[in-house]
Length: 101
Image (cartoon, rainbow, N blue to C red; front, side):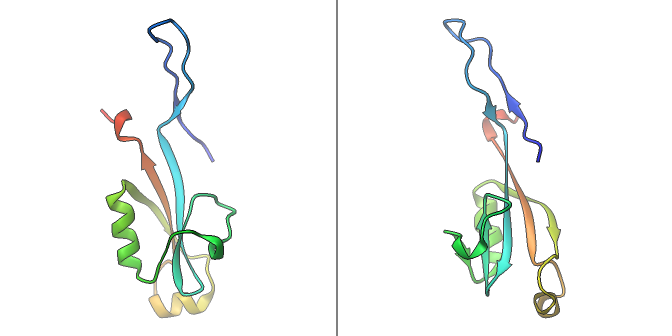
């Protein structure tokens, strides 16, 4: 995964500040009857601290926090696709508002 950063070299004392990420990535996956928010690609959805039973509520809440859907995917088990007839997960991206001109 590629991450973009900004390195600020002009500081009041001439010191270089630590790189600040301007993009963060996460995933919303349907697992075990719930939509699970994951910030690590290899995380176990069952251990997710944020879960929703309703897909629209999950997406709306995450959108309100600044997350955007980058792509939907459907690598989940077939019964999930049969019930919904669409993707069972989403790739998400958050862009630091301070870095957007």
